[in-house]
Amino acid sequence: MCRATTPATNPYNLSFRSLVARYLVNKAIVACQTRPPSGAPPALPEEKLDGRNPVPRKYSAGPALEDLPVCIIGAGVAGLYTAMVLDDFDIPYEIIEASDRHGGRVHTYHFETPEKPKFHNYYDVGAMRFPKIKIMDSVFELFKELDLYDDEKVIEYIMDAPGNIKLFNGQKVISGVSDDETDPFHVSVSNGGTVPDEYLEFTYVKDNGEILVGVAALLAEAYDPFKKKLVENFEEGWEYLMQFDSHSTRTYLGQVKSYPFSVIDWMETMDTSTLTYDLAFSETIIDSIDFDYPAGPNDPPGTITKWACVDGGTSVVTDRMVEKISGKISYNCRVTAIAMDDPTSDNPMMKISVQDHEEYEDKKYSHVIATAPLSCMRTMDLDQAGLDYAQNQALRTLGYGPSIKVAIKFKTRWWEQTSSPVMVGGVSSTDRPSRIVVYPSYSRKDPEDANGVLMASYCWTQDALRLGSLINGKGTDSEKALLDIIYRDLAKLHGEDPQWYKDQTVDYHAYDWYHNQYSMGAYASFGPGQFSNMYPELTKPAAKGNLHFIGEATSTHHAWIVGALESVDRGISEIFIKEQRADLIERHEKKWEQGEAEHGDTAKLQCLRGILGV
Ligand SMILES: Cc1cc2nc3c(=O)[nH]c(=O)nc-3n(C[C@H](O)[C@H](O)[C@H](O)COP(=O)(O)OP(=O)(O)OC[C@H]3O[C@@H](n4cnc5c(N)ncnc54)[C@H](O)[C@@H]3O)c2cc1C
Image (cartoon, rainbow, N blue to C red; front, side, top):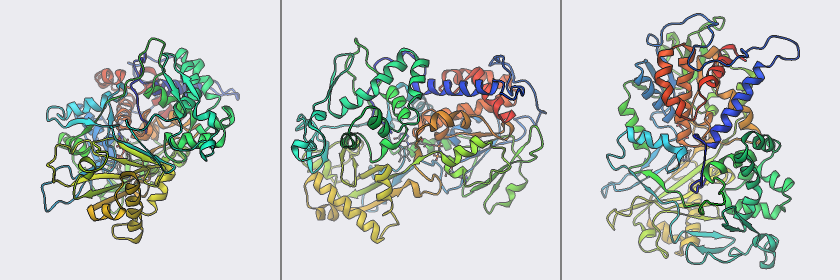
């Protein structure tokens, strides 16, 4: 997850990450078209295909799409959006969901409030905020389609607020009050820390004259050469970046930039969560272009991006999606296997197995859209699903990051009322175990005496793994210990005694996404080399073109709802291409061509790779 400043000028019609994705897919296709050294014929046609025409028919016709349902595995955003699109085309489907609720990683938890009206007694355990930048357009389009604007459900999410606190190395800095010193957290050697003094004073001047100092300057110094090259000439820039594709951010900063260990450690501490710099360097650069486009000489200094959230919690979105779709969801149905009904057929129908539901054994589907996280797909028997080696490897090795959230329902909204400073929205950050405290953006209009819910800890990576090990159920000793840690951190941030926060507590809820059996992790988190190598394999279908990997992880914008939506457009395209339905392709094309997924020739050739298994 990234913080964002509004990109200066992005000349592409699609996000930078999608440009990269299309490039990667094209390279994979060219590799399949190139005659191997053995002299065997190339598997894919060498000529370019017209995106509108059907792929060359190399397989028998199956039942019409209208006659046999599509099986959608998972009722998260991707599964529900697939259903909405299939409804538009009058194509029948069934949604099979393992858990007892829809929404998946969209999950708003509501506290019980017997004594008072509910007000904003909830928090978003999963997705909670959306930057208002071009990349996110399809999310806001969906909000429109679901009447969320008409019903005034889309409200401001406050990302930074005056009074937000930074507490590192025991030193507190309050935003807007005491944040202009060079070494406020006493990390420099001369202040008793380990960071050589010159790095704290390191400055970097952006092309538009904006001057950065310290961590921001060191990051810009490392990232900007790549970003500028990529923006000037994508192919050359990409080839240059790929020379470092096996690097993590940490190894790049250490081995290539020669930043000392203590400097990298300090940068990571201030910039993100613990050990995030072990993830792919190239991913960081790609994200950085989309969220912080390099400023040209005439660009104004980056203005701060506005963010939005949904009043009532993000589950309002998935609830409305469920209201909108015509099909029903079969809950408590864990898919345990996906298979081709006849693996020897050149165009098999699909079948699934569902734990404790034998009735599925006799069912046949035209296609399977699998939106379950790849981590969960790994638990299914896919032996008869026709995955190739690279796809199996991707399912096994793709990283899923951990994340935890702990929300506490307090008797009063003390952070908005009596705390010094008063806090309405934004986040405080610290190197203490809680790492991030998120103040609700939405409760300020609630009655003064209403309860309030504070996201008292939001962690990723190693920070999440550690606190996550304490999340073992309400009332357990470990959760008591977890709360004590959080009370201590709140006391350090806000000044009261830990016992005061304990006495103020009405209830709490702690959630660890890695120990959620239906996600087995929070979101895809690609390690060095993984995106460039795995994306082209995950975005081609298996099972001779009838099994489609959809969902957040198989998209260009993984870890965001928008990624889940984009992957659906690709999956639907794959189905229409495979079924040679020029009529449907044309109707779908407008949306698809404007979207982030591969399009035209590329999608067709990817689909062909899937059909031919190359
Ligand atoms: C902590 C956290 C914070 C986030 N913050 C944001 C944010 O602020 N903004 C944003 O845009 N995005 C955010 N995201 C990402 C966003 O939530 C996801 O990208 C998106 O919800 C994923 O949707 P999906 O449909 O791909 O997957 P999911 O929502 O995971 O849906 C998959 C479904 O498959 C089901 N399933 C699993 N196994 C099986 C099986 N064997 N059989 C049948 N069904 C199965 C699951 O129960 C689930 O319902 C966040 C995610 C997390 C975890």
